[in-house]
Image (cartoon, rainbow, N blue to C red; front, side, top):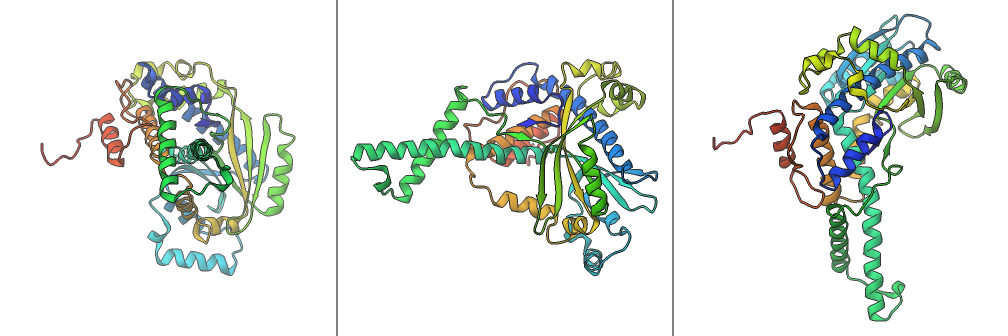
Length: 395
């Protein structure tokens, strides 16, 4: 996974790539902790500053900020309305109030809402949760591995055709034999990881939206805002996409500089270090400041900017394109569900768990790409990181 919203994206990618090959360095757990602290703080501060700059180009009034942890908090604010409402929005609000728990109220979110003078939602910024990052990396890596495995299976079929003395296009293979060849190809690919003979393509495994901003305004205001981005020397628009159909919005990938002096000062002045005293790094080391954690960071980060009018926002949170349903659809539409991509997801979840846990040293990797595991295996080892009881009946 290559997370462009992180300032240590290359270092994190290299650690993940080594872990996929089963290679653990003694300093990995400590360095992961340092990276997740520093990169999370830098991303959060940069998202806040960038969101404020963008919103001030539309809204001249003072804006309040409210931290949220669950999607229900966001949906309650949305149901306050935002000016003139249409019949469809009123109907969606009515349906929500009849059964709020039907709308994934307890889905976690690590975000901050920006509210106007009347308490209406005008913006939101969030950092994607580790579970979602691991899941998205699973899909990208699964697609990449699937193409590799498929190519190897085709080579095996070509070898059989050659042995039979017939052209490949005339080869008729029973479905059971095709499945066997695919499984054999998958095992061969898994073996290349154990032998450290495979390298990931960072471009194919890039995730651009770990940090995200959503601006809510009228369509004309959003177009004017988008036009101003081209003249901002601290921003570069790398990609644009317009979503149609049930989900409607304009998505842009922005590359932004971040201000080391401001961020380092904020880490001290806001006593942000106190939030991280449960991560296995001593209070004295954290008080030394963010500089001790930074190492050699990248000067820019990338974030996703979503531009949406209020009716489309209501549809995406309460209507036919509700966000969680899109997530479920993505999970159900995977083209490759072998044990290798599942192990990728387990291993990445464990990687983040290590970086968030009180442990700054681990002696082995409990998940290997060439092994087979149940979710209970991951749960066991994550609980162990936090020194939680394993809930065994035989004690």
